[in-house]
Image 1 (tube, rainbow, N blue to C red):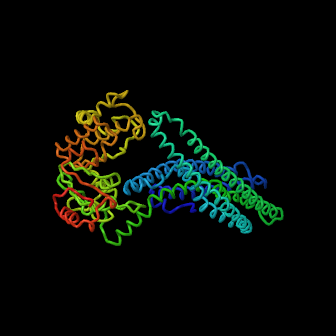
Image 2: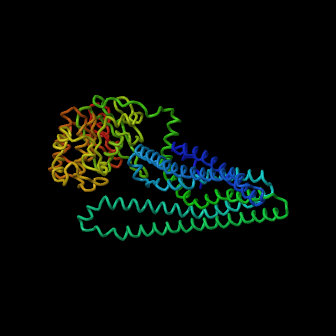
Image 3: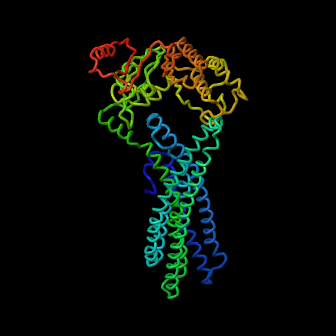
Length: 577
């Protein structure tokens, strides 16, 4: 385990600035420590020798006071800056993780574990400053000792390696416990989020007490793992304190004997005795805070697993090998440009299934097109290809003549309104989730989708507060909210992924009415559906099939010939052969 992963500096710019600040603060702390020790030794030497007057002690005592105040100020500034840098770095890493996960798509995200950046704050505030100080203060303080007396410097050099050796031995145990604790925290967090999201459903079924034992077991497991980590951390701190104390005592004995024998003057001896703890202190603090390093590096590794996944690296290598340009082309106008699937196939990760398979179709602008097929045929995957979230395994998908994978996602998403099966709903009021002020457009969208009836039943209307994922609303009400949100200011292309899956027949009619409203205003609508009410509203229906569902061409020559004719016919709306 590296105490400082270079990838942290590469992925978080705030960490670079903080590192530069720590170097400056470490240099200032080192200089102030040497000045404080030497000034204290000078004042004590004058008092002991009896040759110093109160007036003559003013300068060294002033230096001692100034150095003490300076070290306190630098320490306070360093800790305050550490908290701010940690928050900025955590925010940057979280943003990059979310962007990376969004770019990889739902399939990749569903197969991954969550990553945590919470434990990075102790790493930035406690461990990293001591690590920088060790690299600066220990050599500089040792150089000052060499200037005063090289024999004492040799004694310190003999004792110094003891601390890193024991720190490495204890750190190996700490690393394993920290990773175990991180996994326990992720497991507990995921379970709690799932429980809270489904608590209303469990309560409605009278099963709200069933998960209690599981949550208690997870909490107990996390507590036991935390106590093990703290036990090792306290043990490592005690061991390192003992070693630093013994080493300082050995140097002090050596210096005292030489002072008694007359081989070392009083000022040099006192300065060396006071500088010796300053040599050992950074190493001792690094060891005491090593558990923060283990937690931070374990959390950072989980973040880098997302940012530097094999899929991303492989895609980058393929892009470089083929010489393709970056995905930065502007999206053609979806109000007038068709979306074309040309023998599109997408392989399911970890399975032999290809869904969709050999899909050839055309989505005309200003029309309502429905993707139809069995469950698992690849309807939602085809929609994800349109969104640029999934790349084709073979074949192509393009807007006009521009391949979708070459289009900038920001430019593409700026023209698409997307209503997924599980819409994103943030904690806050209903009105805040609509993303626009209360007015005519919002009221019209709510009326078309029937969401106005939902708002009328809420305790505070539009100002009713809802929880994460829409807690407080039923599944159907969440779907109506997402549909109304898409209709407030619809973009040229509206993508509906099973919009009526959780609705009854009456509510399904409201979805059909919303689709008619979008078509009347000239919007292109692509809907994933298998229920008749929405299919009846379609101008074109695209049949999507997986490889196992597709007919074998060599078994039916007539069917294969008809399929070939359909594939080359620009008016064909079928696919997935």
